[in-house]
Each structure stands twice: as C-alpha cells, then as structure tokens.
Amino acid sequence: MILIRNCRLVDPASGVDGRRDILIDGERIARIAGPGELGLSENQAAPDVCCRILEADGLIAAPGLVDAHVHFRDPGAPKKEDIFTGAAAAAAGGVTSVVLMANTAPCVDNPETLSYVIEKGKRTAIRVYTCANVTAEMAGDELVDMAALKRGGAVGFSDDGKPVLDSGIVRRAMQEAARLHMPVSLHEEDPAYIRNNGINAGRAAACYGIGGSDRLAEIGMVRRDLSIALETGATVVIQHISARESVELVRQAKRESARIHAEATPHHFSLNEEAAVRFGTMAKMNPPLREEADRLAIVEGLRDGTLDLIATDHAPHTAEEKARPLTEAPSGIIGLETSLALGLMYLVRPGYLTVSDLIRRMSTNPAVLYGLDAGYVAEGGPADLVLFDEKEEWTPERFVSRSQNSPFLGQNLTGRVKATVCRGKVIYGEEAVAAP
Image (tube, rainbow, N blue to C red; front, top):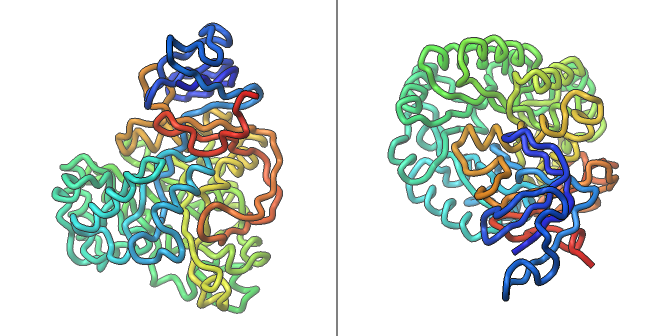
C-alpha cells in the first residue's frame, strides 16, 4: 500500500480541488479522505501490511497525464527513441498513458506491426496505446482494414506525418471510423503550399532566405476535413493546430458537432516563429511555429475550449540529424518532459487556465476521447497519478528521452514533476517525496 499524504488533489472529472490523503492498494485507489482522516502511518495500514508514505505537502496530485500524440520511432528508428526509452521519458514528465502515432517503419497498417507495438508497450511502466494507419503504407490511396485493426487493439486511426490528400479517401475513412465508433486524427498540411517544410513562410523563412511553409497549407485542409466530418458524423481530431484561421474554423465546427476535437502542442502555445530564428533546427517542426497572433489565438482556443486537447507531438531525432543544414534537417522536437511546465508557465500563470483546466486538457479529455480508464482520480479508479510542484524552478540539462532535440534544453522552466505513479507503483521520482 502507498499513502500519498496531504496533497492538493486536483481532479477535473469530479471537480475536487483541495487537501486530501490518497491511499493506494495494488493498482487501484482504495480511499480518498481529508488530511489525517485515514489514520495511517508506517506499518499501520492493516495487520501484516506495510504502508509506504509519500509526503506531498505543497504538491499538487492530479490524474496521470494522457498524451494522445506521441512518436516513439519503434519499430524502425531505435537510435532516436524506442518504446522503452519513450516510456521512461513519459514517466519523467508525469505522463502515465500515451497514444502512439503509426508512422513507424514498417508503419502500423497491419495486425502484425500493431501487435508488436502493443506487446512491447505492455513491458513498460506506463500504459502504451497506439493508433493504426488510415491508409495502407501511408500512401493515401487505399484504406486499411480498419475493423481488423480495431479488433487488434488500435484505439484510433491516423496517417500523422503525412496528410491524406484524396478527399474521397478521407470521406470513406471517416464513414468507416464512424461506423466503428473510432476517432480519426488528421495531419493538415497541403504540400502544394510548402516550399520548405518546418519553417513559417514569413519572417522566419525570410531570415533564412527560403520559401518556408505557408499558412494556407493548413487552413485549406482543416476547412475540407471539418466539412467532411460534419457530413459523416465522424469523431475527428485536427492535429497540432498552428494558424489562427484554423482555430476559428474548429470553433465554428464545434458549434455543430461535439465530435470535433483539436490539439494544441506546448510549443505552439509557448513559442512563435522568432524561436525558429533563434534556435534553428531545434525549433523546426511540422506545422511550423507561426506569428505571435497565431500563438495568442491558440491560447485563446485553449481558454474557451475550442482546442480541447494538449498533446506534445513528441518527435525524437538524433543530434546528427538536427545538425544538418536547416532545409535538410528533419522536423520535430521532443516534449514529454517539458509539457506540464510549459502549460503552467504559459497558460496557468498568466491566468488563461486554472490548474484544473490544464489537467482536463492534458489528461481527462484525451482519456475520454480514446475511451481509456484514465484521466480521473476516484476510489476504485486506476492508481495513475502525477505529483508536481507548480512553483519549482528548474533547468533541464539533459532529458531522459534518448533524443535531446528541444529548444527548451538549458532554459529556465517553472513547474516540476516530483513523482509519477502508474498502476500503483512509483515509476519516477520516489526519492523526492518519500517520508523520512
């Protein structure tokens, strides 16, 4: 048994925000009560049962984070990340459940690769789920057997990393996903408007003397896919929104359907294209960082619930890859270990969101979307928790992730994960909260 003593419990699902003790028995939460009401101390849980105590005075306890957009590069690119190292990075960031994207090598368009990912994920300390692809080999012209992949354990469908350009294929995919009651997540970048990916076609591109990626690449595809989603009744996720026009399109569509969802990444709500000028390839990602007005529109979308999911798009790359010239280096940054701090710094501290609002977007909402037993704290519920200090300052000098490609490396951050509990076990940071 584990007793988390005197924490500030923040649980969006129940609306609780107050001092509590939490007793964990096995993989579930046994009791939640006011401080001291359980009357437990070391070796007093029950006859012959030892109760380990985690002192959480001054810490917030919340449901473990659920990151619904993650790349672990496994199978195919273990030098960047694999399922084991990715899971360790997740634990360090307070993330107890991840939904992997399917653009691996081979990609997850068949039951065999799907089974490999799921079975390897079971050997980690966190809960690993995965999407399957929308189209075979991510080629965009033939649907996968979505029903078979659902039976195999996929929790959604996505060709993330590539857009599905054929509107007929998109319509058929949404129709089948709606029949199966499964979400479809969409990468919205039309290559017709992109000369050099990963850098905004604006000040950043001009600085480097390149064409960059125009905002129209995203806006047109978002408009098309929202229209098809409303027509088919499908549950869709518009991934990693970067443009203010896209935020408004989602806002309008959500007035017509509760099945429309949209992501914001921590880098898109905390940085603008000036970071691409400052950090170069370490701030190159798809879609790119855009103007300050776009960043503020994303923040407002999170505030009013238009953007209901915060997901990292954790995208590991090697140092050698990121050291290439700007137009040759791959896009993407890691984010599992900095997402909570960035949410606290850029959304909670300025007053856009409460802590409960933030946790709802980082845990409760994605869990509900994917039908996961996660995202809440309740008696009888899963013992998946994050304990964090919302005020502690820290500077990451190295991440747990196998890759280190992040503009936040060496930067001062506020808000630090102190411990992560998954399935009733402390999987990160026990020494920070163990009773003396």
